[in-house]
Length: 281
Image (cartoon, rainbow, N blue to C red; front, top):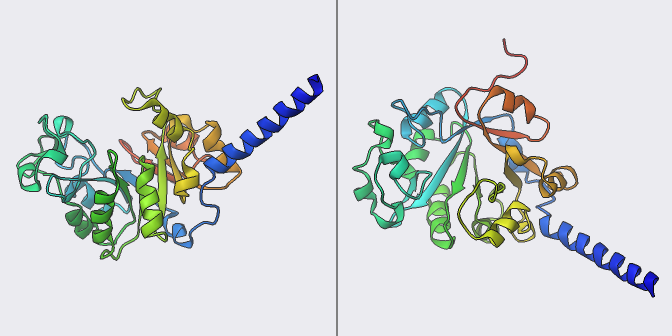
């Protein structure tokens, strides 16, 4: 009797492990276009300094990234009148000292606010693409509170006319599923972190699924963009070592962090410093 119970438990554990591996399995065959993203360092929200005339996610910050030969990571969300604009926070409180939501105001209403006391204003996604003009690759983070259709449709309409190299990423798996369905050839990445440790408000069950990459079987991401602090997490490690998925580190903020993460990640999004390669003097 005891042996039978042990056998049943063993079978159940085996089935659970198989289901777990299936759930976290990313896209196994690498998109050849992804190689074009290699060899670049990516400036987080542009090459910026929020105390300067080139604050984060501003046209000047993107110009500086292009001038210095860095790829760019940026954030896109929708205004009330469904215009894709480039701004990280859903509210303007941090960037513009205005306690209002981007989604509740039109683009023209948002244009009156200046970014971090500079002369720069919130740019449209189209303005940013015109500024970059295909000179460096861009990582487009889709800021999706819940439903993905509206933002993904508007962003893809613009990107379809863009001649430069880009990929998309999002914390919201539904955005990646949308791209998988409508534009399967576009390189897409799953963003993740340890949401509970970061004390991010939200649904704990949803955060559990995202932290452990348990929605990969639906989104089939081409890469995993993971907060470098949690690089030893089990699901991320399995995706990296077993499934050999492309990995992107965010956000590296010192040379020491850069060196300590070189063996875990292939691409790096950096902020607050300029990474140096070992052979640089």
